[in-house]
Length: 392
Image 1 (cartoon, rainbow, N blue to C red):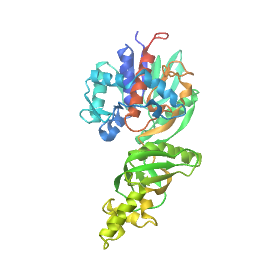
Image 2 (image 1 turned 90 degrees about the vertical axis):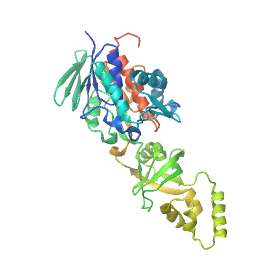
Image 3 (image 1 turned 180 degrees about the vertical axis):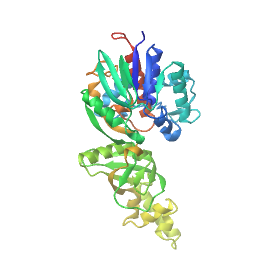
Image 4 (image 1 turned 90 degrees about the horizontal axis):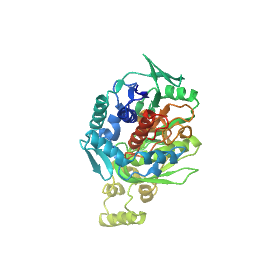
């Protein structure tokens, strides 16, 4: 009789885990609380789905134990991920190392995964919200809002509260009751709220962002900054947001330093302004700044006590982040110290495995978080479907 495996969560990690387990001959049921599987996957990369990154740096992953992620990712690599998708029929394209489906549509990725799941006769139950998870007679009993399932092994891929996902708290509470330590989740890869009101909403500009905190070294990112009515957004802000939220939780007073002209040293910028004033004495400062900055930003900088320094080192205090619904991923989750990195099986509950964002692992923008889903999902699926003692 084939091994019975229930997977909690039908997102990227859950679908990958299910496919890998079914390919080994396991009978797989996926329980998904939403009306359709892969809902969050469809929105990744602004709907384009940045699958992975050819220059993936395993040291860039974050969490209480960053080395844990590195151990997992080395077992199912970027190369293996691309082989998996190419074999399944997905053509990909490389945009400076960031890998996308050739169609540039996340729906293509989800379609390939769900079609493979159907081919492998995986049972996919939607609107199935798990209420309890109980060990029973060497296996597991899973109670949902409408049914009861029994399994030889369970893989938990329940995601997080990011992007408005619901039901994670109840699942984490159930896992906590089994002895697993939960690191309180918080938004990561999220826009930041800033103190004060600035008339810059709608401005997008290439710039440098430096995060200053009381108790950690400064961190720097560069890219397109989006200035909003509540504060700041854009990829460089996302990359720093986890550390800003952590700083607030520590009781620090984090600040962002915004450089709106990162290609120009401060003295070179001052020289350019002097040159323009000498050439066009009838122009005021704001008119001159309109030549290098968006109009709203030029007006703001022109009103600074030291406009040159203001354009290069504009400081804003961080008041918080937008809520979980605006976050791409979350920090925190199930502590990795309770898991075996080789299999992602619980050290406390045999037959219980984990994959994806529900663990205390998250990465920066650029395909890192989806690669974590693919790698952890594949390893958990293979391990859960293997007979005990069988080499993976």
